[in-house]
Length: 319
Length: 305
Image (cartoon, rainbow over all chains, first blue to last red; front, side, top):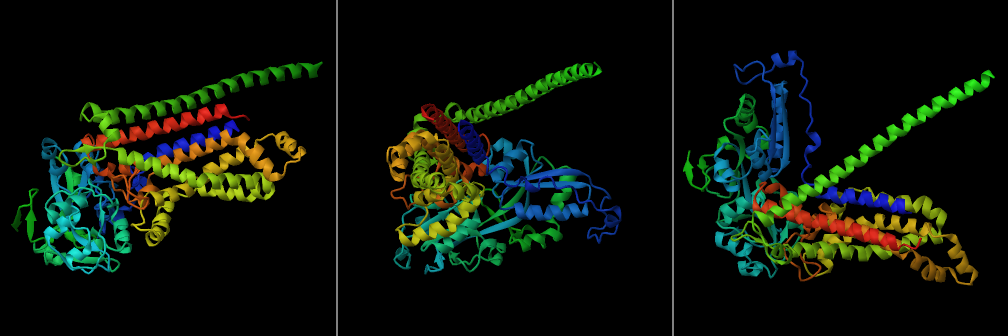
């Protein structure tokens, strides 16, 4: 009897402790992927797009950080490893904060982030990092399909997310309470939405919902009457209704020409100038092969297509 | 004669053999224990050192952390009031235990007293199977079934403490049932037979003799279940809504210690005040787990079996 209790107790204790570390190792599964063992024959006959590439690139890279960028970097790294059999690239998630910390401390070669390093790290630490902007992620405000509102002004969004407007009838919709579905205060998506759509920080309100993945946000907004949230463009479909911002529809075209402001760069940071392997990989990320391939397929906007640039303070310049 | 010499030498060999075996076993088991103890001590040290930084480096008042109502670590000025999380954790796990305890007691009584053969052979493995289902599956079922149901039936958004407690109660059911079953099975049959001999019916025996005698052990199961519910992160996070407030109803968005940690840990930078505050929450969580373990030990000491 006692033994059994002790055993159960030990197991429960293990579970309890293990539950704390759930989030950290969610992407460790494919960490030990061996380099693609191409025979040399395959490598020489490659239908290369770049004419004179150095023949053999060797080394390993660790890219970690933003879960919003993870699928893209993961896909690109697989394509890169197929072309360069001597290179191993590990891609891990963990969040923008993790990516920036690890690259700043030298634990990772590349830190993926959807916010500028200056916004998360101390100024002197951020100054050491070199920014490589590989893609653009745009976000749109979304509502439950039954909500009869097609456009938000900036002020309306601010009023909703600060709790001044709590019913859709104040915005010309039905008499239905507004349910806010947020991302956590530390999330990069939320930071982008607050910075470029609201223009100010917002606080979590009593009764609001917070979810830590865009998939769950989409599910809840689609099911809860009166719900409002925000999602990256790649998540949009018919289960939710996309709302314009200041009369501008959230489309790729409007982001590219600068009329739709709610977007963020996908950053890949290195500490100092990248080494040979990292540089080759980052160049590959910016090559047409990735910019027109996985970036478009996975719902990002190619950085090369952008007609404008924006710095950390939000100053927009025409390219 | 030859046979006896052979026998003695045989004995000597086996004697030596056992001697070596003894030491190998002893060293091996000692190493295992040392490894476990080191791991636990290191873990406690790590969490404590990170969690206490909030008080020493960021100068957050521990009392403010425990009793403050406002949590906005990224705000101006940052506020670190974790009482809504502590309240959320306690209310969900207690409510889960409240739902699961009667179910697990009755299931155990059925499996041991009413239909021992069928129960132990088929029912118990099925219930133990529940323990093996990953928590994300529970969470997803909660989000897809329980939350929409609550949203339609009760006022509110469906997410909240009620949904969290219901999901958790199913998750802790196997732990509680297993402990309760073992407790009932270990009851000396003399007690029951004595009760029958005095003319008591089966129900009288169960609730006058069996349940009172095994109560400390049953409570052990309840506390283990609460501890498990307290530490569960993923499933709760998916259905509770995660608003850092003490909710006004069971169907309003709330948050627990674990969901606060998993929600923000990856997005905060190591060494920032926000990150340190999350480690403080982890420290609270760990201390609570220790409290639960001590309660279990104390209950075991009171066990009449």
